Image (cartoon, rainbow, N blue to C red):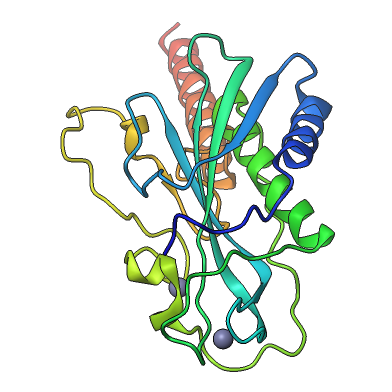
Length: 234
Ligand SMILES: [Zn+2]
Ligand SMILES: [Zn+2]
């Protein structure tokens, strides 16, 4: 059963931390955070954006009290600014896992250490700052994990059962079904696995700089040649 899971994180503390992280860069921005177990990967309403990351969390089986850790805890966020760019909201869903030993048991929610919580919220804040305010995306990796052995237990992972738990970098979960011919459709802007979101970079890359430099050089040479020809024509 997914519907009767206990409350597992203090969402008002998370919201407050997220707020602080965003306001360090954008003092006027106000973002709310709510848990929502009904949001679906790729199922955003128009104007919403999605961010998916994975984190390190610990689980405890409510049947046998066995505990386990996973660095593959999937976290899905849907974000929207509604009417004003400085007022935004985030809906957050954390995917559960089930005990390997008790296959009949319910999916359990993870608990996060303060370090893991900080990484999750920092990545979310970075994503918001990047996709709504044009900042660089500085991701924090999943916490280095000691003592984790064995592959990801796919048959007991809620995200795997929904087909969204692919290990690796950006994976589009759902293709745009009604996207306009030009420009990205924000409904399907999907970020995955702590990677840099798929927006085009706002700064010049080194390739751009080389291109601009070559163009400028060509232009100068052309002007010099024209000037010399004008002189010789005199
Ligand atoms: Zn168990
Ligand atoms: Zn999985």
